Image 1 (cartoon, rainbow, N blue to C red):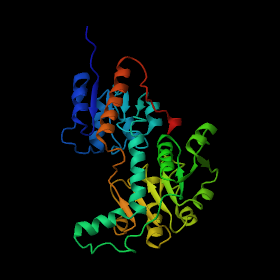
Image 2: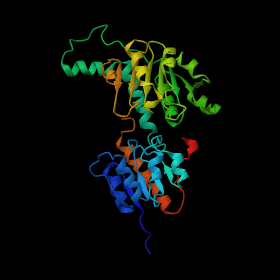
Image 3: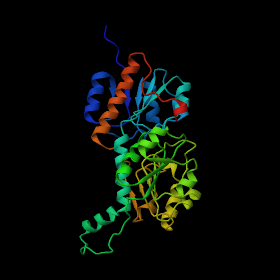
Image 4: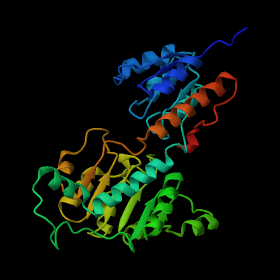
Length: 328
């Protein structure tokens, strides 16, 4: 007798080959139009699904989980971060939450370096002049930026992405410093050539570039606030590809406008896609629409990890990428 296929609801459009494979494996509802589900639509999806496959754009709180149907067994997040899902409430209901770790590490680290170079070498400004057709030719003092070689890079959050950034940074001649909840093992530190700072404040006052690679948790909310921004050098650059809520965006905007911070490269924002309009006006800021993991390879591999978690559940086992409350 054939095994009954799990009822799976996917909240956003996924790469074609991922959706094709899902249709082969599961009783799946796809979001063909890719319209973002509102709160009521998400609740309805959780009431009819055995597995919900949401994305970072879907905020799933305790009240919504409380209205989920008895059939819902797994929230298989299409992405690594799960701060948009109340994992504690899900566990209390006996609902697994899984994610897609490792898949986006290298792509996100590449984007950190891209933003770092874009800001320090003023690449968008140069591109704007070329596209406008106003370039008058080379000049000794035109578009002067900062050299990366010899600068100090501070990494906030030395997990998978932070370590991948550190490996790339060494190739650019940056000295690597980091602050993390827990110090890395000595052999990892040595391999990365990284210096650990127990005090975030002390590290911030000494680095030239700050790369934020930590998750959004109650402990990291506004970790980079007005007070800490004032500790940094006026020439310093901040790059954020993790979660926008880690930075007090209004304080950062004020610091950039006042010349207290040298520049910023941001791929994520405190209020999702609602970007502070004052940031758009600043020439020393590079803004990207959450592109850190936007490679064909990453998106397909994310789908494969989601399907692996669902298939493992279907076999009666906990999903391999299960997220527990203590991990958030």
